[in-house]
Image 1 (cartoon, rainbow, N blue to C red):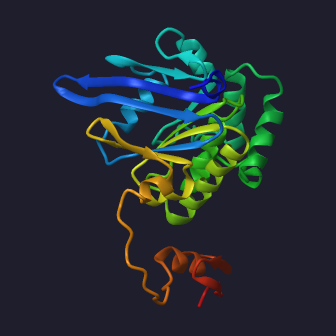
Image 2 (tube, rainbow, N blue to C red):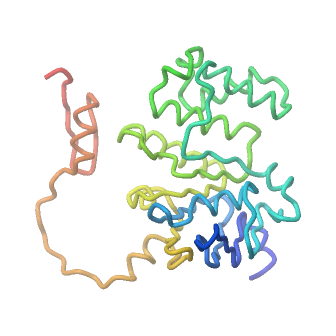
Length: 269
């Protein structure tokens, strides 16, 4: 690897292990994440995804191995890592007693940033929450609350963002809203490490996908590279039926364009 390639790696993990009592959760994890890309860590419940994210975000110490985030070692320079990252966990961290704008202002003040009100307004606009900014977070929908949660985590423009199962428990429309938010992050140069157990989520969002199974990465590559691991199938021409996602979006939107074609549906039936 050249020096230039090394500088372009935002996350480097080598030989990370972690055990809890007699249970070996991570058994030597290795991967790199290129700066400005979306890296999906795919695995079933209990595969060790959250444990790994907690190690990378300095919330938990590994038993062995090394991890470097934005050129900072998680063990020898945890302060540098924390300044470089943001973590959005599986459960929303918003204060429901505060409005959306107040939540954002609070984070800006905690980061000792100037003009917290202006920062809050900018983030509300960026995440399409301006109209809801004055309302308490308690009345937000699941998708709105998750967008606010991500907006809070991006205050201060961290170069690396960890999203730990960000769409867990969300309805289909809210999931799509979060997906668009994640795409926008990478579009603006943010490095995103996304953990998920949803195959379609990794397929739609990730530049690279790593499969974590029994504590190790068993495959790591682009979607095309992973698809080529299986033998090709016989091609048959069949009528394409609309998916459940196509039907759902057509029914909840006045006009929806999808892979199944264009459907115009009037609400209320």
